[in-house]
Image (cartoon, rainbow, N blue to C red):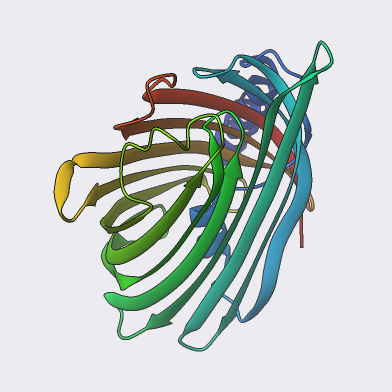
Amino acid sequence: MPGPFRAARQRLLAALVLLLFSSVMTRAALCQVNVEVLRKSLTKEGTHGTLGGSITTYNGNTSGMELGGTGLVGYRSGRDLGYFHTNANYSNFGGEVQVANAFAHLRYNYKINDGVAAEVFTQGESDKFRRLSLRTLVGVGARFTVAEGDTLSLFYGVSYMSEHTSLSPSVSDRPVRPADVHRMNNYAALLLVLDPGRAALSNTIYCQPRFDDFRDVRLLDVLSLDVTVSGRISASLQGTLRYEAPVPASLSRADLMVRNMLGVTF
């Protein structure tokens, strides 16, 4: 029956929103939405995006909480799709800077047909606790639509990536790889729409081995639950698991990050 079913669905969404604010035991602040969810929203031509900030918990090379700001904007016109994503985070515990990082990513997709799109991208990042003074990269490749429907979508992407890394002074005399390397970038992106226009679950997994040494690899898994709270206000719970090998002796190979977020979309 439509009435009871709708009421049950609304109760479920309310429970999901409560979960966003309680499960990681942080106060929520404005922050980002997942890029795959933004892609799904860009079915109409024009510009869409989100602006905000965050409170983040870390467990790995560092432990604690941080404040952050983020921006994500995407544009679609015909076969063209582009988006720019940037964020920065900073924390100071006991008078000492514990976390200071910044990230920017620019990507352009050209849809060749319903199943294939060409894409080019560039990215820059710095991260104090990962001992990255600056890492920049450029890449080119293809994105394939494995399945795409109203409730379930699956994509696979593969590309060539050229990367340059400058380490922080504390570890720059002990590099574990050349400053300039070439990688194969593979990713699989799954998007599950739980309630159209209201809730979506997405998971993107990246695997980036070095062409000349497959033991040198980076793995990244981003899981995100995004819920529209009201109008332009959305909530998100996002977990990120990162693995990199090799790393300098003073660092852990794995990091886990959990974010509890609210976003303002446009």
